[in-house]
Amino acid sequence: MTSPAPVPMLAVRDVVKAYGGVRAIDGLTLAVQRGELHSVIGPNGAGKSTLFKLLMGTERPDQGSVVFGGIDITNVPSFRRARLGITAKFQNVPIYQELTVGQNLFIPLRRHHRPAAIPHETDVLLDRLHLSGTASLPARSLSHGQQQWLAIGMALAAKPEVLLLDEPAAGMSPDETRDTGEIVRALHAEGATIVVIEHDMAFIRQLEGTVSVLHYGRLLAQGSMDAIESNAQVREIYLGSAAH
Image (cartoon, rainbow, N blue to C red):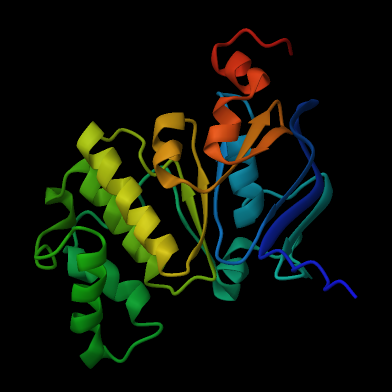
């Protein structure tokens, strides 16, 4: 007897989302397994940002469903999804610029740790994020890349079941981009389930996870980065010559 297929950690099923008659997501079915590092890529207008919003609950699909651990969360608001274990690092860095780095992390850490344990937990988290020794610095003094890492840390501090990262390397220098890739890979190696929404194929290549390619709101291809890069249709859309 064959064993049943594992229940996806997070999935969308036959999802449609339209804006003014234009389908940003067009019948998309996509599943992320527990412990998977899954990247979603595609050119501008592919539907990546809309998918991120549907997963977070800031938008609701017109059709189809969003499922978390086998439970339909299509109509569950974003704050309740966060409590269930879905947290996100948005493209626009949601940190408190006037607070210190440590104070930014204190806010989510206090949900899971006693106040006396938070300084130690802060140091552990900062070490994982290449931010050791910055706890007392004002968050505004960090570089753009470091602020992105702090935002990832704030999401991690909530102990998520699934971590959603929206263009985590956007606006970074090449060195910061490489370091961000190392951070994401290390988190995955520790067992985290991570979904990365990106358009930068070079950054995704560094992550070495499962890759799904969106095109006009549909799933065009899925597999390893080697398979994706050898796909003629994928090369065509990234060169901008694919037919609508």
